[in-house]
Length: 407
Ligand code: URA
Image (tube, rainbow, N blue to C red):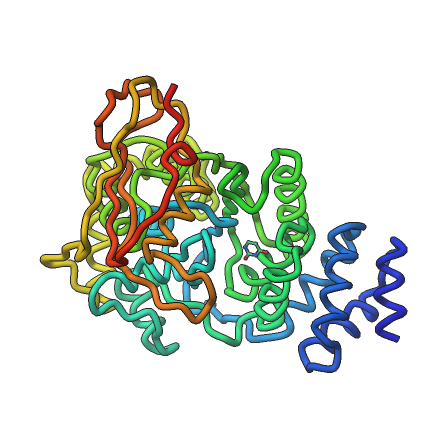
C-alpha cells in the first residue's frame, strides 16, 4: 500500500487526501520508515504537487498537533515568517514596532540550525530571558504589554517538525510545495489570521532563484485564502547578509540600534516594509499610511521602549550587556571597491566561530559572531578592517576572497 502511494507520486499522478494521510500519518506513528518517506519526499520534489494536494498536506500538518487559541485577543492576530536568512533579526525590530502601534503581537519563533539563525536563540542571548511561558503567563503578558515572543511548543504541527528533520538530510528542503505547507501549517496552528511572509532568495537562502520565490509566494497566498487567512509576501534578496551583525548577541545589539534610529540600510528598509504590511492588514489601512505610523514610532522611540518593556517582562536583563569573546579583525589584502559580501560564506564562518549549531544538539556561543565594518560600494584600502570576528574558539580558518569581493 505505502509502496503503491510512493510509486503513484513517482509516476506523477495526483494523490488523494486519503493517500496523503495514509503515508504521512503512518510516518508520524512510525509505521512508515525514514527510507520510504525520503523516497516519497524526493518524488514530490521532482514531480511537484497540485494545489489540492498542497491544501491537503497543510491540513494534515495542522491537525497533527495543537491549534493555539488566541481568541482572548480582540481583533486580528498578525504574524510574520521568514524562510530564513543570514543576519535576519527583523522579528526583534518588527514585533515591538507593530505592538507599539497598539496591535498585539503574540508570536512563536524557532531556533536556528545550520546557516540560518532563529529568533529564540537571539533572545536567549539576553541574560535571563525566558522563552517558555505558560498559557496563563502568555495571556497576562499579551493583555499587559501586547507583545509576547516564545519558543514553539512541541505540540504545534509535530508532523512538520518530523518531516523537516528528514528533509534536512534527504536533499528535499528546497521543494516549494513542501516549504509552502510547512510554513503555512505552523502559522495557522499558531493562531494567526493575517500573515506576512518574507521569502528570501539568493546565495544565502534556501530558495536560489526568483521564479521559485514567486511560485512560493503565490502558493502561500492561495493556502491562506483556502483557510480565510490574509497573506502578503515580500521577496527579499539574500545574496548579502541583512545588516552588519551576524551572531546572536551581536544581532540583538544591532536590532536595538535600528529601533534607536541610529542606523539605516537593508535591515532598516526590510523591517519597515514587513512592519508596514503587518500594520496595514491589522488596521485595514493602506500600506503607505501604515508605513508613516511605523516610521513615527521608530523616530519617537516608542518601538524601542516596547522592546525594552518586552525584554524586561520576559525576565531579560540588558543592563551592562557586553560581548564576551576574543576579537580578531579581517583586514583587506588589496585596494579597490567592495563589490560583494557573500551571505553563505559569511554564515559558514559565523557557524565556525561558534554562533550556530551544526547539529540540533550543539551548544551555541551567544557571544560569537561577525560585525561587518564596510558597505558594498565603499572604497577600500589595503589594511582596512573589513570585519571583526568575535569568538571563543582557538583556531579560525577562512578564505577572505570567498567572503569579500574587492576589485
Ligand atoms: N521555513 C519553514 O518553516 N519550513 C520550510 O520548509 C522552510 C522554511
